[in-house]
Image (cartoon, rainbow, N blue to C red):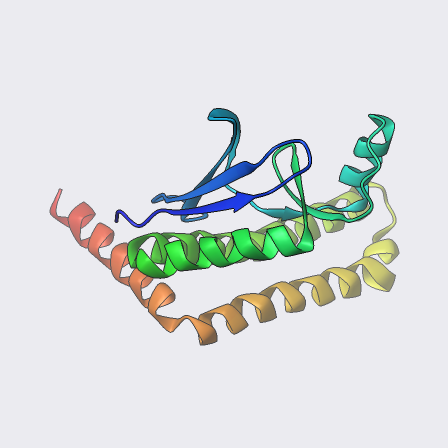
Length: 184
């Protein structure tokens, strides 16, 4: 697991280098941004700039409409982000263990989303009955939560169809853990 990629990005304020290192964690990589040899930021994510992030930039007096992505506080153009994204994918592809861990983390997140919807539905139903207005649950919230649950279960099913080895691995680990507990 030694494949590392470096992307140099020329900026008016001086070149920066983004080093993509493999990591056995949820994202499978660690990003390190340097300018003039000094570490500017370390992060796990190359993220799109959303409205919230852009509003923060504007409040700070920074208006960079051509910037589309960021690594921590370092903002990038779409072209530079594409180069970093390609490096990330090459590192992930060269490190299958990290890919399995990242996919496992992604699947757990989808399963947790299903559980969160079910918990939210139970709480909403209980609140409606405790408030003495069960019709609130039966005339709207129940259908709303059912739709959310269906969407969350569909996302998990699609993931499992695309990556059956991840679910099989998790089921195998659970079975092995159950066997160990039985022997204790």
